[in-house]
Amino acid sequence: MRAVLLVWLLLLGAAAQGQVSPVAAVQLRALLALTEQYRIPGLQLAYTAPNGRTTTLSQGVQCQGEPAVVDDHTVFQAASLSKPVFAYAVLRLADRGLLDLDAPLARYGLPHKHPQNQLVAARITARMVLRHTSGLSHWAEYGDTKITRWNQGVLQLRYRPDSVWHYSGEGYAYLQRVVEHLTGKGLQQLAQEEVFTPLGMADSSFGWDARFAGRLCAGHDSTGAPTLRRRFHEPSAAFSLVTTAADYSRFVRALARGTGLTPATHQLLLTASGPATHCGPPGTAGAHLGWGLGVGLQQSSRGLALWHWGDNVDFKNFFLVFPDTGESVVFLTNGENGLRAAPPILSLFLGPDEYWALQWLLARP
Image (tube, rainbow, N blue to C red):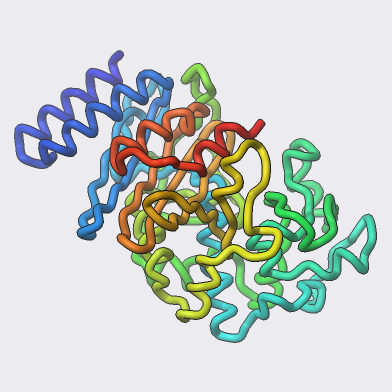
């Protein structure tokens, strides 16, 4: 209740000083009700209208039981929203001829152990990784041993490469190691040069940065109880990005416009093909979804949208952007229930729609 009261006081004070528009004040009140309903301690949101104007809204606390509130400069774990950022950096390298999207990654000389069928595994390409058709397993399929496995250089195939769409964080870890080996640069340096600096993302990093002290959220479980304040010291293209909704919104809008990419590569980003033309079961929602190079694709009555979600268990995040209009929503939450609030949040800002991506996400086990 103390956090709710504090948010209300901040809202009323800001509205009185003209810092929050009447529309934003209504939306903030609605967000407050949703975060209370779903026991989400803190939330950041950035909405960009078709006219290009971006509104950012922040509310709640960094950690339940502590006084620090969430503001526009509070940093959240982006979780799998890390993947589109890395994919964008890879596409920029490919545009400059530093990486061939269709060359087997094994040709780039990074030593890895393949516990089964080395000849098949050696067919994996960057395009397959970005479209989640590499056939590699996902972390959840073998528990909490992902860092140990990668330190051992182990790859495990679940499917024949390019035979089926299968979400794989391990594939992104593999491509990260290849790109670092190829360029001689670590992930953070690559991201800084290819993404953060060009797009003005001053509050984003793939690893822990001391400047985030005092503004890093803790995670929370489904009851709203705090879990951990993780400080990722080993950058991961799959899950370690920390960022703000405002920063990530800059990225999403650049991605939708094709900023920093050749027109041909941008078109590839927006096109699903092969096994990635749909995401498959559960339910019928998958028939309306596909996968481009690093992002999900959704077809609906409003046209094509790009989307992705983030899930580090105690942080849940989502974005959706319409390339034709530039309208977008990015939201970050520091609670396990964050995605449960996603349908009413999107409806609040974007209006009614099918939102097939959310239907598919919420139906997954």
